[in-house]
Length: 437
Image (cartoon, rainbow, N blue to C red):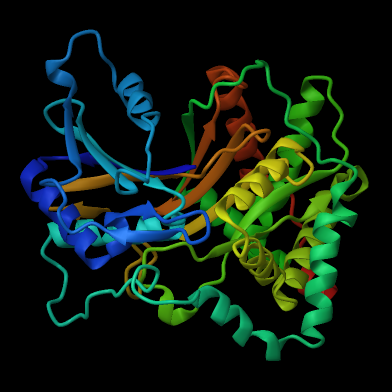
């Protein structure tokens, strides 16, 4: 599974300087210069000291005939990445014309999550701008330098905060893998049928004014932005299926949650788990009641550390030989029972400034970073995922999809429908927080 971060820039970008900035960021975050090693019983990451000159490639549209930005972007995205023989990072500088270009980062999800990917990109930009303080200590990536699992240790440290921790852990896993297995989650209508793993993406934006209105609705309803994003996603899936004559019973959304300890946030690694709240048709009939349920479900998951419970499950699976672990993962995917309807993630504000709410564009040398786009992994049978990020007060929505299942037109229409649901969500002015308590 791959993650992408795309920086759209206006202005001159020095290829050699950018390449050196990426190398500098790799030195600060060693996981980005590792390959996967090990036997059947002990997989591990090995730091590669002797790397080529740098991971940055260059593509110039002005020098290519019969080529366009989108085709080159998708071609780059779909290059296979084998982390057994190459590092989990690939970068290309794609020149569109004399003043416009994009820097496209590809990350393997085995090495980092979406938050870690943006952290790495930010370090690259800081290195390019010579803004990295020499006094700041280098980030020691404990994933490649110490025994044990820091995330598991942190999960263990949370036991005292949850009453009847062991009972709730077993109960949560029982619900996830037994009670929640049926009925199967609804699938999103798609207009194609194929097996290709190729990925494409499409974009939509909620303007700063629209974002202000959504945040105002969230405050008046006593909820957060994520609650509206989740509730709008349920309604978008149901409306989309209804438009194509397909019913929607149980809709289950995979929503990643950052569970890393504060002292671990400066590292590029995997520090997310997820929750999978679900709704039935009666829950989605009224927007205000749906928002109340979404808020209650996410608050319950946070209060009972539900996302931590999956850490224990996968740690238990990691005790088996690698071939058994692969069989378990394949079983979970092939049966489709435990795969949710859709993945939705919000990585938050990109490049927040002190005492500011991202009012100005960020620069990379002489170039302005006009827009920042991040994508989430796509698995079968979901077929698509939505990643949300805020940059320069624009709420950027990126839908990554499999063209074997969705045409470009249908994928864009679904994303536009979701963006419209977010903009126009009818949140009740009553305090949902009272219901949660």
